[in-house]
Length: 96
Image 1: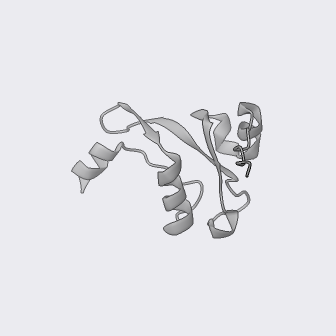
Image 2: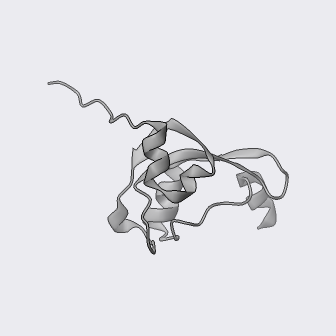
């Protein structure tokens, strides 16, 4: 039996799929298709998840908002798809 190969998406196709991807640094090799039926969104769903690099508001270090964490935020917890973390995991733990 032949295994399915993962779909390849160009960086431009990913950028075009969701407005915020135009303004962030992301890894196009980390793409995973989202289940938009489980997302909370207004005008535009987030059709793909990709690892996104953000800068922590508190410590100023860069951190990655990973695909697996996004899937939990948007599909399990029901966070709005425009929400994103502003602090790295270590700083989020310190704030608690």
